[in-house]
Length: 507
Image 1 (tube, helix red, strand yellow):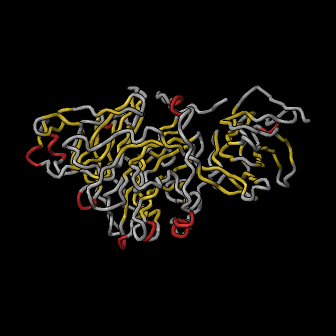
Image 2 (cartoon, helix red, strand yellow):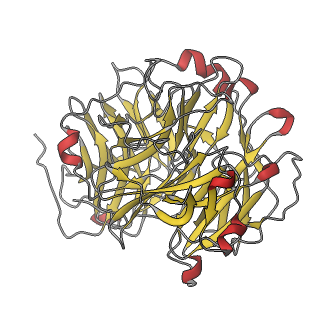
Image 3 (tube, one colour):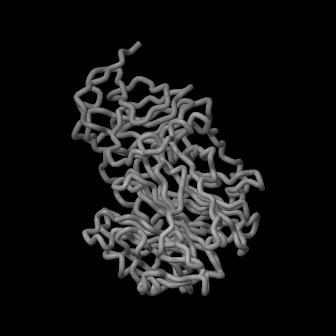
C-alpha cells in the first residue's frame, strides 16, 4: 500500500542497475568533522518553532513530531552511489574549458518525459571566438562563465544538444546563458505566465544576485539585478544560488551566500513576484574550519532539507556534503552532526575524492530518491577544476531514521498528540533482522491499541493490529503513537482512510 500521489515515477532502468550496486558505508568522519559541526549556530533559535501542520505522512526526523524518546538516536540514511558514475563527463568540448564546481540543476520534466540538466562551465578564451545569433541574447552577457544544458531519457545516459543560441568559432554549442555564476534553475508550473515558466536565481559579478525568466529553459530574457539592502555588508553570491515556491508563505524563498569576516554562511531572501526581494538574512553558519559553501534547499513531506557543502578551509580543504533540515526555511539544524550524507571517496584518484556539490532538487520516485551531484577529485582550490555529474539514491523517506543507541535495548519514540485522520496506519522502516512495534497510548502512557511487530523492510506498509478496530475508534481524535524499535531503523508513518481492518491474532 502506498500513499505517494505527489511523487513522479522514474522512467529509468533503475531496477537492473540496483541489483549490481554496492551500498556505501558512511565514512568514519565523525571524529574529524564532529567537533567543528557541533559548533554550528542555530540562527533564529529564539523564535518560536512553527506549529506542526496536519498531513498524511510524518517524518520522524521532524523534531515537532517527537515528544520524547528513550535510547533512540537519529541517523542519516544510507545512500547508494550509482556504479556507472560519473554519468556526464564535462570539459569534452573546446568551449568547456573547465567546469569548476559544476553546480548542477537537474529536473525530471513529466510533460516532456525527459531529464534536464543545467550546469556551470568556464571558457576564459571565449572572446572573439564567441558570437550569439539571436541579437537580444547578447544582453545576457559574454563573460567567461557559461550555463550549459544536457538532456537524458533515463537520467543515466546524457547528451548535450547543440543549439545556435551561442556559437563557438562558428559552430553551435550547448550553452544557453552566459555571464552568470552559481545559477539555480527550476520549472514553475504555478505561474500563469508561460514566458516565466522557467526561473533563474543566479549570482553575478561583485557577488550580486539577479533573476531571469524563460518559456523553455533555453531562451532567457535580460538579467534583472535584485535590488536589496545588504545588512551583512558581504553578500557573496558566487555559489550555488537556488530559489523555490513555499505554499505556506505564498512567497518564493531564495537561498544564497554571505561572507561576513570571510566566513561563508547561508542567507535567505523572500519575494512575492520573483523580482522584488527582501534583504538577505543569515540563517545558518559554521565555524571557519567548517564553512557552509553552498546549501541547495527543497521541500519533502512537509519538511525543508538543505544539502550543505561544508568546506574545511583550515584543515584538508575538501568539501563534504551534509544534511540539514528546517520546519520553515528559517530555523536550521544539522542532521547527525559529524556524518557525511553523500561521502567523499577515500581514494585520492576517484572522481569524487575532493569535493561534492549537490544538485538543487532531488527527484522523487516511487522506489527511490535520486540525488544528483557534481564532484571532482581535486580539493577546493582556485585552480581550473574538472567536475563531473554523478548520482546517488536513497530509499523512500530515508533521509534519517531512529535506531537504538544501545543495541542491546529497544529504542522508544513517542509522538506528540496528532490528529488521527485515517483508519489505517502506515509505517516506513528497515526492520529486516529486527522489529518495529507501534502502540496508541493515552496521556498516562496506557496502551489503547497495539500492533503486531513489523519484521521486514517496508515502505508505507499498513500496520496490522492485535485486536479488531485498529485506528477506527480514534479517527477524528488526537492520539499519541509510541514506537518500539529493536535492531531496526524507523523513518516515517502516515494515516490513510481505508475500510480494511487488518488484524493479527495475539499468539
